[in-house]
Image 1: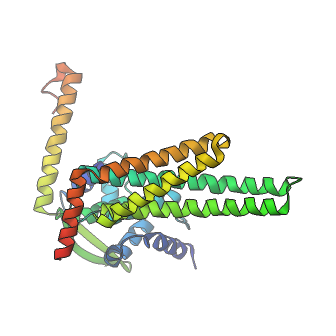
Image 2: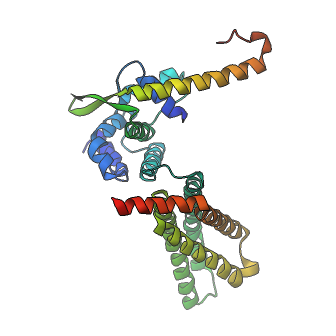
Image 3: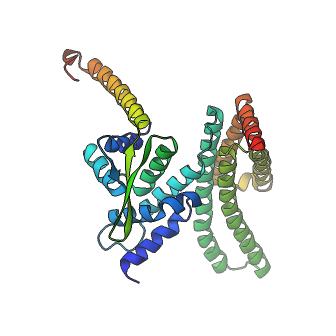
Length: 217
Length: 107
């Protein structure tokens, strides 16, 4: 496989996150433009290119059929911010986990059972952080499409976040790292703001209206 | 209207263009300041087509690859004209206040 083919395959892999209807219409065309704008001898998709493509895909997927009221648009933007904050938290956890693992391995006097427990807790935290990012994105999608079930799902999600924060506070209290506290508080505040926005009267009217339209079609 | 969308519509205002042509044109219109990327371009084009502001003019196969030309619809041209007038009014007001001596001479 030559460099150009490799690059083309990379572009197609990133493009897979676009809606299928868009790809069946425009994939070859956008690939041609991407190859035309690539640098001489470039073999890999650059980070900035991938970021731009993913942002476009998100925007396309989150585009509603009828324009929602301001509160709902604000809520969707907040949920996207929540996804970004959660992603930052997930990356931080994964990056720092490596050094924690190394520290655990070299620490004298720690029992094997305790070490195993700490390691599995670490893995659990990494996985749940990634799952949380996916959940935030799913919520953004459901809320932007005017799905009433999305509001209910978000309310449950908010309850879960609140519980996690409270349990964390009760368990670790004084030993909680300041960065952890700030990240948790920021994510919780974003979720609270979203909850208020999606249950405002004008938002409720919009969600009911979309549900009615769906029932008729 | 976002600047990228405004510049894409401007690029289509005097005739049809294909994707790469729009990117090159927008760069020239904005004096090299705006470097459109493919994701931004096609998301905006998709929206413009859905809203009836732009449409496919024709398709060609160049070196085995699909090349699609886009053009502005009359509705798109009207929206672009309104947006351009709005931007000009804002710019004129700003320049007039910054530089009262030049009032009327900046347009």
